[in-house]
Image: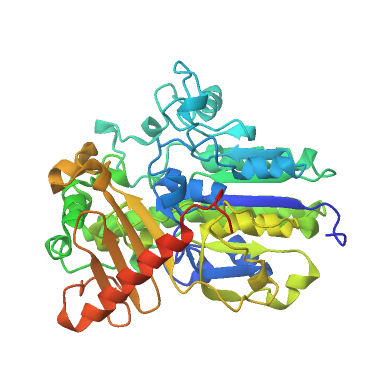
Length: 499
């Protein structure tokens, strides 16, 4: 690292950002010139996947480098074991003050927290972070700031976007909070303030951006940035009924997921949203992505103007994706890749990365690889705790000879149907889990207590037709089950086990 001195690290985690949303992906069509330039400056990983949903499981895999089956953070209110070393602690041991702006989701281990402590049992920020600007939990700091500007912000963050009855506002109106006062702008201002005062000292900054998390209500002018008519149609079966016939869990999700999962004030179930309304909702999501892009552009511009970009590793990803009407669903639920396929961009400023700038890697990569990548960049060995591997060989144009040929993600669906999924499905609460194994050829979904699914991705890239029980696919289904068992056996936690 002598060529750039002690380096800086900027880790950007954007909540609920799908891999096909940024402009460079040529998918949904968000306007993202800054992300496009960032991808051109570094390497983008086109088959990159989060390890769990919702936020808590996905972020725990980033923080620990472990699969969900090992860290066991299965929901937003599930604690992280105090025995697990997380990203900020690794950074402290390397001489950094790990700073956090905005948003992450973690719950402290109740065995180390007094029963009366308000942090016990709900999302908060564990003590290893230096919190610069806090957008956590009830968003009280942000709401207090808005209140000082004259907004009525004394109820809740969600109440800011409610549609009051006879005022003429509809769910598709722009946010009542001006763009310069949005939570994205507020978090980025905190990051800019921090980077200005740290410009002459090495730093590690985790910038957590909440958007494009619902509600999909962007401020003007972002609410009109993308024309709904130009957005690709959702990937889904011809009807919600046809979709529901694929699996009991999918039927339960479709029967219970409300339209308000995307927009406050929108009545009914997500599966029943009219096509025009869904197109407008998708445009709102992409408008939020456009706003995030513009604000992140300010961060990159400051680093460039102050001469810091040339000694800063920049890593951008998301904790999970968003269904956005695909398969007649909203939010991050179930087993479909829209909830787990996320962007990943790695920008290494060193000359060793020059040959790969602007390239896309098509190997299967995962968020468990990010902690090993950061440590590798700092010249540290990958700890035995980690299930992932460093991505730097790809960035430096020397990809490993042996690499995974599948991606995996896990989902605990015990909170579906108001926490009664197990009753509705006739299984035990601890059996409300699934794991997905996705390769180029097949996607295999294994349930703890329900029938598995198999999708032939060469013939059915939309994951619409289950062939697990088809006679012609019996051997393929068995092979996928064997591979999944081998994956679990070879990646079980061996932190204290001998080599």
